[in-house]
Amino acid sequence: MNGARVIVGGAGLAGLTAAYELARGGAAVTVLDAREYAGGRVRTIRDFSAGQHAERGGEFIEPDHKELLALCETFELRLARVLRSGFTHRFRGADGTYRLSRTAPWEALTDAVAPLLRRYKLAGGDSSADAVREMATLSLSEWLRQSNAPADVQAMSKALRGFFLADPEEISVLPVVEQIARGGSPAQVEFFRIEGGNDRLADALVRATPARFLLGHVIRAVSHAVDRVTVTVTDNAGLTQQIEGDDLVMTLPASTLRDIEIRPELPDDQRQAIAKLPYGRSTKVLVQSSTGLFDHRHARAFATDNHL
Image 1 (cartoon, rainbow, N blue to C red):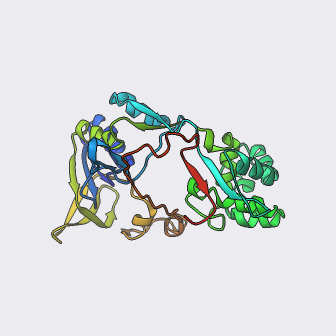
Image 2: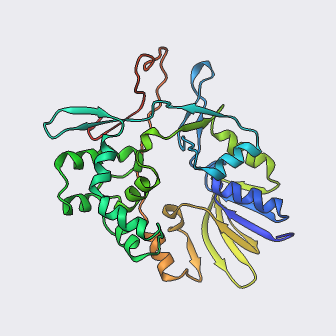
Image 3: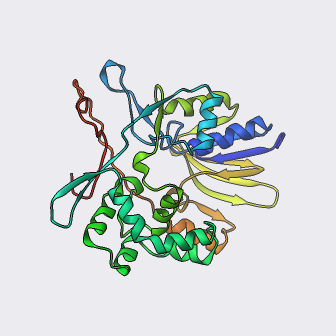
């Protein structure tokens, strides 16, 4: 890549990491992002008193996030263990009363998807296998109905919305099977944050990357030929310009990418995937308290199937 002009679309962690590695390889990198800051969906808020901060976006780092952990080690960013007691599920039982459990929903779902889990393991977890692809077309809710799962199991599945960011009617049963195959309940997984704020990783990547950062620039169109690629962008002042490079690395989420005109068009199956890929919805409310609200509680994080 020495001397190659590479444009990176997106300044989230994926785009920043790509830019960092490309620049290390000798490429002349330009990073584009519509936001006025680098980091994408990682955003640390520091408006609280007493120097406290909170994560408005991506928050938890898990032991299997190998690439992320490697970057933290590279930039000497220390991790802080959080939620040592894991997540507790609050769900409505068959008798109408609410119950608390760290593992009950996952144990019930493990039994409910046992036939699918066997097929998944027989296929070696290969996403291209017919049996696995079939699971991707079936929602969790549909599978539970087809398998005559008890009402309390279906209620428990709704309590997992906070983990998957989607209701059982919206999420494929495949991610549930994959999670169970990896070890089951995420309620007992170790969780970490970066000490001082997760945005420290984004800041470290920016400082370590000799690239041109054009923030506040919305990508409108991409035109690619055999020997070059041209990206049309609009800045915050409404001015439109074209940026030319040898290669383009696009790290934008599908929800943004689908609004960009790409010529020549991508292959049909790729365009369809970008157009139809759904995303979960999540809302965070950040509240600061002068007292330790959870100091005397064993459980400090909850997932529930009822309205808050």
